[in-house]
Image (tube, rainbow, N blue to C red; front, side, top):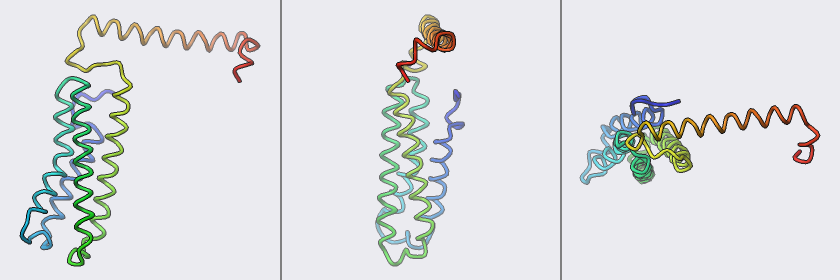
Length: 167
């Protein structure tokens, strides 16, 4: 499936949910103490969705990949601060929500990793690099690959004895 807008990406939707839930969590009295834990936790969680959006809008696969890895880093930073928070007895009443948020951050990180792996194995350099000639060549290659696959399947059915050694 091809996504036209970052808002439609499942990983962006998960990431924005992470940020919203972190903002709600950090309204708790535990986060009213001196220091910048609340602000840093909010910034890191919001950074996940923001970097997905920025990378998506850049128009090149290389830049998108860079922003996906930054986003993954923000997932790790968010999880680290949640792990830090749960070590305080004063935050014991937040244990369940912290656990849920850690799981959501891990899920975002896994989705980002899978997307990045997929992009790294792609021969498309991104929207910015697409022109009519590149599109024609790309579609021609895809059509050729599909034809070759259908041809091989037809040959396997017509002459199974020639392919018996491969099984």
